Length: 144
Image 1: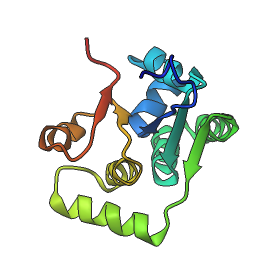
Image 2: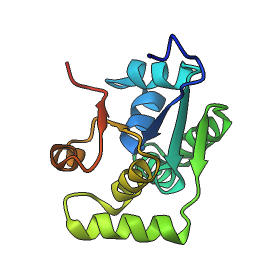
Image 3: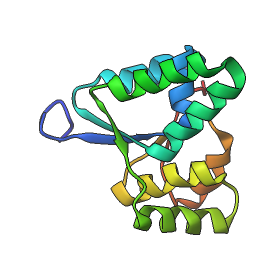
Image 4: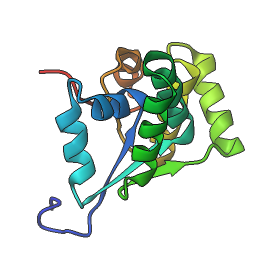
């Protein structure tokens, strides 16, 4: 049975900073991110750590006004749940980081994906190794 046959079935997706930045800046893959967010059958989550990553990237690149606008846009999205970093989530991210290959912020997206058995929506090649090992699933937003 697929989602169209049973509208109760919900897909959960985890956005990382890459996906949020693509959406906010209308970069490659933005349409894919927007489509996932717009689908009423989807639940979309993002770690607060990844929101912080978006904030500091925009603060450095474009200044405080752009960072503030992005923060407001993210928190105003009714279908995007920002997930707080509990100690258990911090520990899970630290264990992923210790295994190597991901930044600490990306490790939070990966840990949340594992916790919720959901794919990470990204274009960040750092996630390729984890996907190859079968540790997480990835929805690639900027690939043909």
